[in-house]
Structure formats: C-alpha cells, structure tokens
Image (cartoon, rainbow, N blue to C red):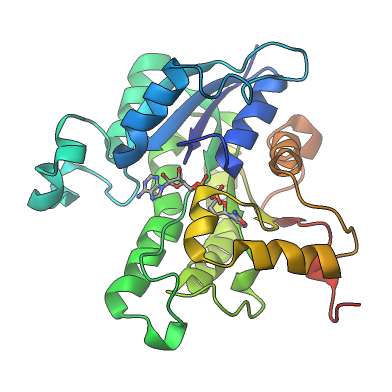
Length: 286
Ligand code: NAD
C-alpha cells in the first residue's frame, strides 16, 4: 500500500517543501500539502494555470500530483487562538479550517490517516535584525512560527499517523554555530527545533512508534531565504569552503527526506541529518 504524506510549507516550486513533495511522490507516496493562507490563492492559481508543470516532472516523466491542498496557518492551534484582526483580514476571510487542529481534522475526515508528516516552514519577522536588536515580540514570533508550529503539527497529526510512520522538519546550522545575519531569533528558533526533535522522537516513538528527525540543510535560493537578504553570499561561502564544491540542489534534500521517512531509515530517530555538501564539518575554510 502506498504511503500518504502531509507536507506543511509549500507555496511555490522554489523551496525545500516542493522538492520533498517531489521526492516522496517519485517514491510512490500520495501528496497532501498545507499552504500558508495568504499564499494559498496564488499557489492554487499558478498550479491550475500550469506554471509549475515543468518543475512537476518526476524522473519517470509523469507529473507530480498533489491530491489536496489545505489552507494552513501554523501560528494558530485552534479557532479560539485567532485574533479578530486576522479573522477579518481579507486574505483570511474567504478561507476556513486553517488552524493546525482544524487542518488535522480535515485530513482525518478526508483520508483517515497519514504515514508521513513534513514541516518545511519558518518565519521570523525580524530576521534581518541582529539578536541584540530583536524585540521580545519578534523573537517569540520566530519561535512560534518556526519551532512551536512543529510541536503543534506533530501533536495534532500524531493521532492519525499510522504506526511505523515518520516525521521530519528542516533546520539550519545557525542553531549551533554563529551565522552573522541569521537574526531575529531565528537561530534560537532552530536550536529549539533541534532540541524538540530529540524530545519528540522519544515521546512519539514511545506513544505511536513514530520516528522524528530533522534535516540541517545548506543554503537554497527559496522565497524565505531571499527574505533573509544574504542568501547569495551563503551559497558562495559554501561553494568556496565546503568539502563538496557544488551548488546544493533542493532535490538532494528531497531525496534525503524520502530516505529518512522510508523503512531504510527504520532505526534513525531523534537525529539532525546534515545535507549541506559537508560544510558543517569544516572548522576553517581553505
Ligand atoms: P519556502 O519559502 O519555500 O518555505 C517556507 C514556507 O513557510 C512558505 O511556503 C511560507 O508560505 C510558509 N509559512 C510561513 N509562515 C507560515 C505559517 N505561519 N503557517 C504556515 N506556513 C507558513 O522556503 P524554504 O527555505 O524552503 O524553507 C523551508 C524550511 O527550510 C524552513 O524551515 C527553513 O528554515 C528551512 N531551511 C532553509 C534553508 C535555505 O537556505 N533556504 C536552509 C536551511 C533550512
């Protein structure tokens, strides 16, 4: 029987979420995605108009099929959490059931269960500010959108995950080494995400035999990364200093995700897996 995956954080064909969807689809999984509410309209329209058809192509020549797109804002757990100004915001008003709890309920109603949960989302409103200049509000927003969003997703999807299933998120080395410029509490948020990966691996493993891992990915020119402001510099730095001097392709992260959620990785849980051309292993560039 084919596996079913829910991938949170896909809104175009440039990011890691899209590449992971493709690798899982190529391996035979059914693909459901969760798309940030304000980005939903343009994503659906672009898909419908064939804008992504070229990048939907799988190795066997067929086009990746997304069975269903769910609206999602992973900053809110249930309708009681949603402030009035968001409820009435015109980007949200035409849409319903997009809190984490409601999205999980919708998937349950539509499909009953899933096997794979992917978290490929992050947001830090003050990411361009140094940590010393980050406000409490900005810091907490980064942790809410980028770290707790994963705790919440796993919490709400766990009851509908089939035993033997698996979950992954995406992290970045700024959690453990200094990356000047990755600010706004985003480095803190990734440190929380990695620590939570271990604790959640224990809890979800004991509770439902679910594996939990995170991929520490190298730099990719995604929409989110462009917002940080120095993605080209990060890519150049990696090209100059990593053991493997090639640009990282999103597919390499997608393929690692497909391995990690497959039975080939059945003893791997609670791990941070580096997919970065080896840059993490360097102490000094040469
Ligand atoms: P991306 O722009 O493709 O993905 C980020 C997604 O998060 C977007 O689709 C956005 O709409 C969504 N999002 C933001 N706030 C949300 C919310 N509240 N609820 C639901 N969705 C929300 O960019 P990406 O770089 O592929 O990011 C995916 C993951 O990869 C992130 O966790 C990111 O930190 C991580 N990562 C990226 C890089 C890189 O260089 N691009 C490196 C390491 C790790």
